[in-house]
Image (cartoon, rainbow, N blue to C red; front, side):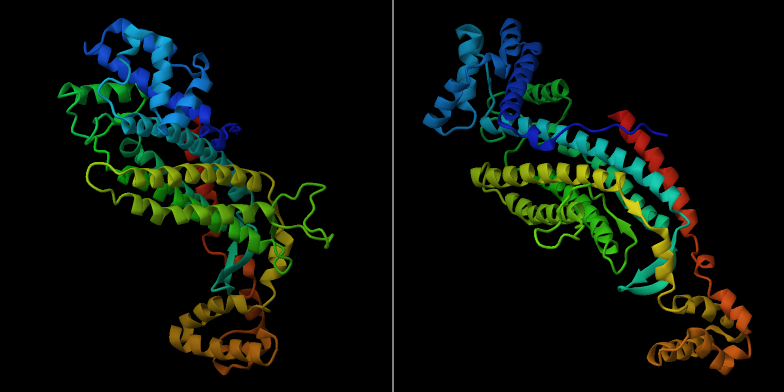
Length: 449
């Protein structure tokens, strides 16, 4: 079994001011080291820049004063780094780069930290769901389509469906890494006029220093990779919302089949003392809805004029920051929900009997179909089922009143066919198989983290 590694990373903290400033400094020092290795700037200057590119060595008030004065997001930081590096080394900071080269690459570094956090969370979540699928693989319950009883299933089958979808999300997130996590060095208009042909190798080396790839075209108007990432997170959020809404619905007293963790002492209402609200599920649903609103915004942010446009940069930065923070909240909350989920198999079994056997209509029809043909069997069972509902009579009675049924099946045979636990199809098989797949994928994700 994979170890259950608790993820202590809080994505909301990744985007705090200190981390943002430090990400810019990390890019500036990576740029200096890359250029020094190419002989573009002196090695000693790169060493001094790297040694001093630490936020704790800078005077924050100088940076704040510069931000107030210039309104520029990066120049005051460069000024302060220049001051602490000294005149000789400081003169080589930011060589040939433009602001967006540094800030966008710095933002990519922070997003990569979020990304790694999500994969750890999903590894933990799959571990938990894998155990849940195996534990509940035989918990018979109503399968529902269009909100109505359809045929019997098991709760483990439902969990297997969630596992299948979540595994594909982890695949998508890993597959996108080469496109999303890339360094940028194109200069003022992305033409590399300030760095020349060696700038291509500089950009590659910056990426290598930072654990990133390199943009194929360092244009400042390219944002499809960030939009792709937001869209992938929105898809993951949609699955998280679907899962949470299912728990939310099944937690209603009318269903009573599961319950999210409700801590002792939790208060659901100021006026109704009995309330045990699905607070966690509701939060996931709300956060996921907000994430989805950033997909159209990020698509709009791709509509950049000419070779650069600050308006669209503001849009994509706003979208990616908020999306990343919300996704961190979602993955952590899903772990909390399923770490303490209560499952009530007895209530699930009781709910199977609510329709008085009608949920087994398909089974009766198929059994009759072997004897008289499917369509004729469907018509006979349909008549019995509709009369059972409309006349509020037992399904067993109305079945026996149908000549085509009574001539083929005895009362004992009908009762035997109306056992819901004998008609769950491959529910238990799917639950077991995806329990194994969940554990395998969980190990892959947690080991790689």
